[in-house]
Length: 80
Image 1 (cartoon, rainbow, N blue to C red):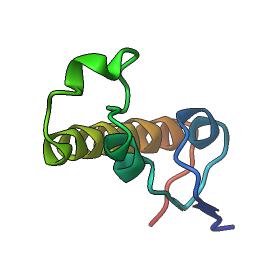
Image 2 (image 1 turned 60 degrees about the vertical axis):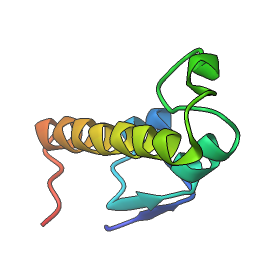
Image 3 (image 1 turned 45 degrees about the vertical axis):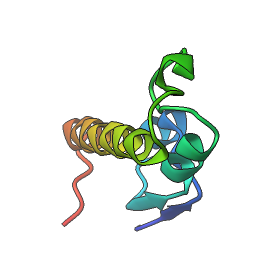
C-alpha cells in the first residue's frame, strides 16, 4: 500500500517505515533558523547567506532520499 509521510523527513522514521513519499519544510526551516541539516554544529554555517544554507540543506535531503531508497530496495520494497 502506498503511504505518504506528511511532514515526515526524519531519517529515523524514513528508515523504519517504507513510505511511498514524504514531505516537510525541514530543509527550509533549517536555513531560516541558521541550521544546516546533517551537521551537528551548525554555528560554522551562520555566516553563510540564507540561500547558501538552503542549498546545503537541499543537497543533504537529496542524498538522504537516495540512501533511503537504496535501503528499501535492498529489503525488497521498490516503488514503480
